[in-house]
Length: 299
Image (cartoon, rainbow, N blue to C red; front, side, top):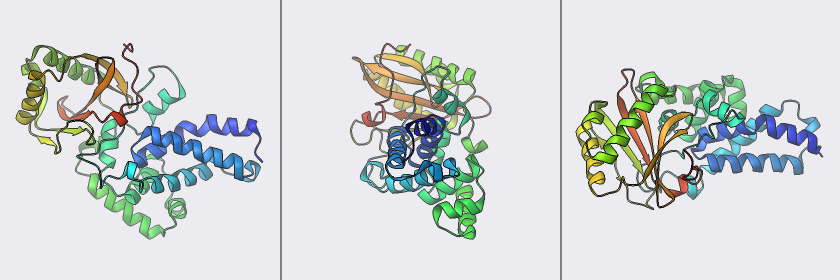
């Protein structure tokens, strides 16, 4: 049976990378953490660690298989979800930790995670393994139990689905831009004057809201700058934006966490274009996806 020392080393070396892999496949960081923990626990119980010549490949195979199975569960099913599904945000501790480095270096920007939702589970798996990990087709085929030809076709279809997105939405927004967007949004939320924010939004902007059927949210995406601003003005007038808004690192980028009466009620993420204008707002209010948010005292 694997020694405690070896398992601890394996856990420390691969935990965050494997969690980031699972997160890209299933869209939930908390579920991905549990999944990776289960894989390592099972390894401790059933396997001889010394017999595993390539621990990373072994763990990757186990994590991919479990992630694909997890997507079939009611908790992660997109088919039965109320309204748009947005990924669970990952809150950065803001410290130079291994998780902090993963969020900065891995492709887990929020816009990229939303982009992956366009793909089927198998397309998503091939796309992530090939584009993010540069895994060879032969290894991907072996992982999925498919032919190399089938994997090439899956990747081709995945690329076709995402190629309309400028720059593949893979790179985090420029920090200075994101801070500007956050600052102007906060001013508008406080004063009700959305004029300055309006100037930062593209004409074809989109707002996607995820309440998961548990809190009120727009069932369909809100299209165009005029309608997006009308949405923000409407809920601001009703007092929905009242409370404390705290700029916070989310998925390695600057976002906003909204607190009211000591509880997290929303997070907002921005996606911009090359000209520094906002092209998409992501509003998450499903409480199940906000459990990892820092406490209200986090400044």
